[in-house]
Structures are given as C-alpha cells and as structure tokens.
Image 1 (tube, rainbow, N blue to C red):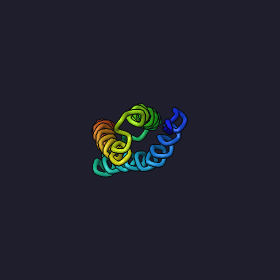
Image 2 (cartoon, helix red, strand yellow):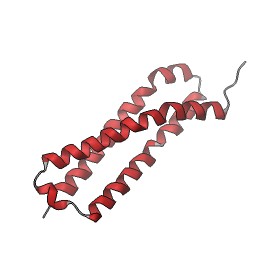
Image 3 (spheres, rainbow, N blue to C red):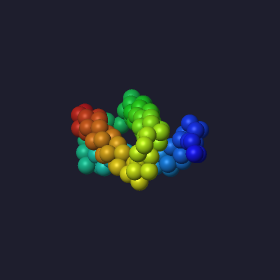
Image 4 (tube, one colour):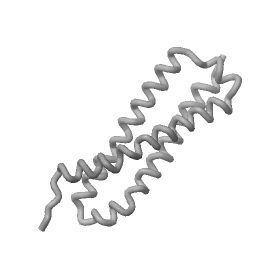
Length: 116
C-alpha cells in the first residue's frame, strides 16, 4: 500500500492552491476597483496614505485567510474521501472567493462612500 506522506499532501496542496491565489487576488482587486469606480467622484477624495495602508493591511489579511484552505485540503487528503475531494475542491475555492469578495465589497464601500 502506498501511503501518502505529509510532504506529498503539502506539495499537492501548494501546487493546487498557490496557482489559484493569483486569481483570488485579481478578483479581490477587481471588486475594490469596481466599488471605487462606482463611487466616483466621491471616492477620489478618499485617497490618502491611510487608505493605502488600510488596503495593504486588508490584502495581507485576505491572503492569510486564504491559507485556511491548506488546513482543509491536507486534512481531506488524509481522509477516505481523497478522490472525491480532489475532484471537488474547486468548490472550496469558489465559496472562498465569493465570501472574500463580499467582505472586500463591504470594506471598499465603507472606505469610498464616506469621502469628504
């Protein structure tokens, strides 16, 4: 019997999730950009170093949250459902992107709608 090692599971998880992290970040940037454009011209007056730092902090936090997928992925790879998991783990990606997009939209709407 060929047992999966933690190294194998982590390598597979990294290979799968890091490629998708690019799409995740592009989608979140697009959400923030759309909110910014829809709030124009009020959003223009909200631009500042503080807003830039806040956006940077939120981007880092979104990427830390993205890492939660690794925990689920590695655990699922050690379960008896590994074959099904590998076929359907894209669902976790989609749910995570939708969830993060909703959060990003709320934060962006709050930052750009209260422009002075």
